[in-house]
Figure: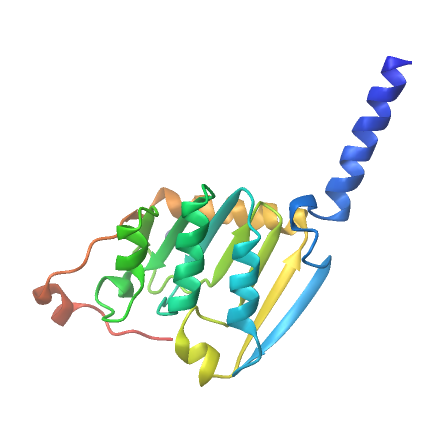
Length: 190
Ligand SMILES: [Zn+2]
């Protein structure tokens, strides 16, 4: 009888896993899309971060959005395991939120192994993936034509988590570049 109950528990657990993510039940299963400008993308990112219950992994090209940076810091302060990988351009980007993230205690890395580290990804609780053309910037929210997908699918999230860790392997801690380096840095191509 105990064995049967265990089998049912396991089946239920697998079923829940396949159905989506329990802690993020308020984010609908399937995929939502938001279109910039002013289509609610920043709000969708902040809402997803506010509901994070375990982990947040970020890959960003440019990161100048104050509300999104604040939501990351809030998650970090709630005890959510929050880690960020940024493009090397953020070493010299004047308005980058990288300093704020780092000074708030969030592990903040730079991936300088590519011409540009162009991903714009957040993976929340190994379940929710937010990605698209939408950079985490004020311009992307207010002035650009962009799209953001919000997916609630653990199988997809698993692939993004693995890719995040692959880039983590060759990334290094964020440090501001000296002025002399700024002049010789490669031009940004987006
Ligand atoms: Zn990389």
